Image 1 (tube, each protein chain N blue to C red):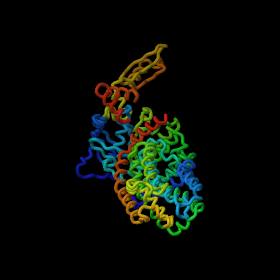
Image 2: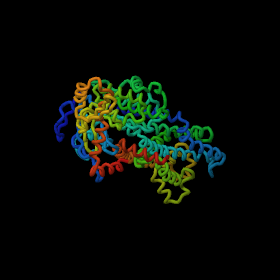
Image 3: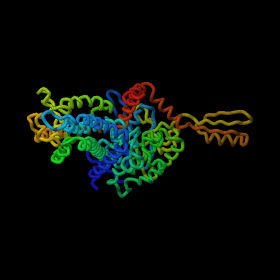
Length: 284
Length: 320
């Protein structure tokens, strides 16, 4: 029995168990799905209006961008928040005390976050298909594109989420402070309106980060070419999407292991105890 | 058990082949504060050691260095023949660490978590014993069978602590570290924990326990170590430590309605003479030897006065 491969398998079952626990826990489920439900309601009221000069409904046109944003949120914020929280509560230290426990832990976390992100995407996409015209036709031809953008998007965001979660000691700071730059990115990345209405320099900044490309990738998978008029260069730019997301994934996967190792090395009973004391002070 | 012989810079063992734990001149410095100033001790296979000492004396630091969770500043340390700073996963599989838990894995059920954590040990069975332990038996051993299917977040403090102990031994460790394991135990849980420690020692598990409970230390330990001012200031069985103390045994008795108290270095001899002289007239006899508590208080006091005091209070801040 190869111990490393065994730990990876154990990690997969860990991820599945935690996914199951999240799905059967009302509070967790609510926090994952609340945003998606709000978006669905807003889109529902937009469905009668069409995008100027096209027969496409505003709801159909907006939903892919929201899917892209959901993936970025899952990959960055869920990963970061879970890591910081489980560092504080001692889950990580417990894993460190096991043979190849950190490997199993990380695999488990990746599986849980990936599955939960997938659920968040489905919660938006499946009702969307029934409620809004044109999405099913888009999906029929673009499903493969949707899958690779989804997979690459997770690879591009999760390692940085892990780095973010390693740097902050306080889980509440991760969701608080981490939220601000990500919301900023969402605002400039053409999620809620076409990126081309923004000044050129903002468009340039947005194209550095994965949120824009995730949105573009989802639009290219689900929308007809008649929607290209509002995109940069009037093109879906598949190659660029693959290139930028791929680059983020490569850089993230190169940095994250070292940051995670450094973080894991510093975990000990007294560091967990110190965080516990701090957390107790915040509560009390 | 086979000892891993490391070549190169490692000095030869001064403790013989049976040493599972070797600590020589262990030093730890945080900034300009010396927390450990040369800790020395060793343990043989199957031995139970308790590490006593005032808060901030460096007990947790010492145990974390041995667990491989903290880098030492200097000194020679071997746990199961391996330097903890370089311990690999094979080595890790032979250790058990009982951590102070708080609220980790709150959504997991007791049996579910134990079974999951046990899986990590599956590739590490040896001729000496199969890993991991049977989870059902383990749950019974620590008395959690009525709670096996409960979510961990719903357990009481004492039940959670028993789960911590179960997690620590699920991999059938050869060396077990317990940092204040009985905090929050009721007397019954404490008693069954003591039985468990004896049972583990019978299976040749070497055990290092830190505790504040002197009574517990006396009951459990083959050997008691007292850590004060960054050094081991006492090392021996409870009886040996008591004998080191210059204090005398105190003999009390009554005769003809009068009370007598006498201090003597040899209580047994004194009582023998007493009976030889007065026979049946002696009543209400009490011989009180110095207790572990007396030894502890006097040792700690001696080492915490003067220069030692500054170092100890300095550490308390670093550790927080």
